[in-house]
Length: 129
Image (cartoon, rainbow, N blue to C red):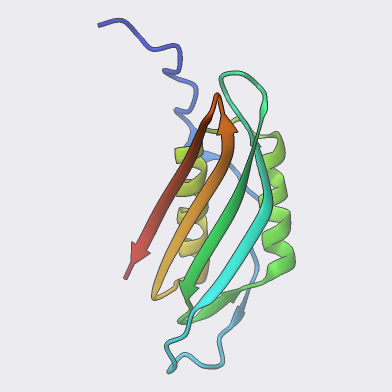
């Protein structure tokens, strides 16, 4: 079988060292409620072409122990501006990092990427405790 030109471009994506996301203690752990975060200007780099990819990143979660501190999360998202990463990988990496840090009841992430070649890509992933 012929190798894809994409093979090997993302083999270390799970080990990517990202900035720390800070949290603060949820004072209402007995309540089930939802927090929505929208990042309308998320950017990363296509690992194949080196061109920027633009997306609206939408995060929805029900906090249990902690809530996301927004300034550190903004710095976390800015980190990806210079990182070559596939759409599918960036969504799953962000989900993994947030779940590991925040310990939510559940979390959903969706990224709606601007059209590339006339195709809009939407990638979503979720975590359920």
